[in-house]
Image 1 (spheres, helix red, strand yellow):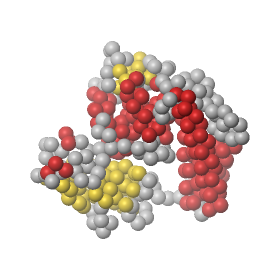
Image 2 (cartoon, one colour):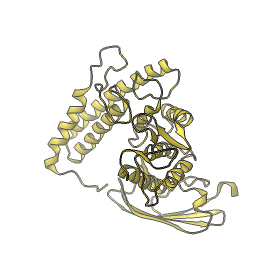
Image 3 (cartoon, helix red, strand yellow):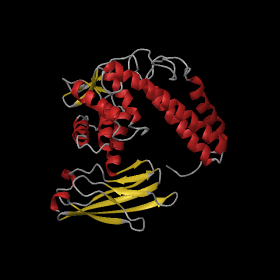
Image 4 (cartoon, helix red, strand yellow):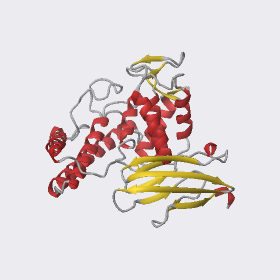
Length: 328
């Protein structure tokens, strides 16, 4: 987010952390569902008992990729390549395991671990799409996991975590919404609005919400993770990263434009630099303008407002007018 390299004195810790990840992996040379994965552990509290959780593996791959990027910042190209090679090997092991688990389950959805049935713990496997983005937005394994969760693990419109939490979970509902937003699925908006409606009178969320009383039934009374996820959800509606592209306004629903008011957002930090934007509704058209303080040359900018033609912006311009799709 800053565009600055890490402090040189941090590099030893970063390097040791990345090496810990790949040295902790189990051997790749045996024919089990957990071959090449991280050892069994308790992982996130909401996943269940000790197991080989894909959640841990996805974060491990992302950690190696992040360490490789930081090595590049510090001009340690050899170590950067080593970490990328280890991340790729780890990813292959995960893909192999998921493929075998899919054969066992008879569908593409990713369970919490290769040995689990599909249950509410599969919410942890969404990390491959959000927040880590180590798969494509339309990865069929990811989207089938969302379909399973929406069909089997939602109560009154929100994700109900029946392990440990035993309630509707605001921040995990938003994880599903983020995956849908990234995939261009308009169902993200109803989940976001539901979470907003579940807020307490002081604008907070308990960690788990009782479906009957709408009060807290587990964990923190004012859960910071939940509040942070709503901020991130709003942020990603206006501006989000996708690989080396900056996506503008992909989560702006028609409801926010119908009043005719201009929307403003920013200045907001992104991995490309700090961005501000405005969205001005016009008759059958919309004008979107942006200003960026970029770390490097400007990124490729995509404007993807729902209901309007998606456009890749001219790199020499900082505004664009879009036509409403149904007005053509």
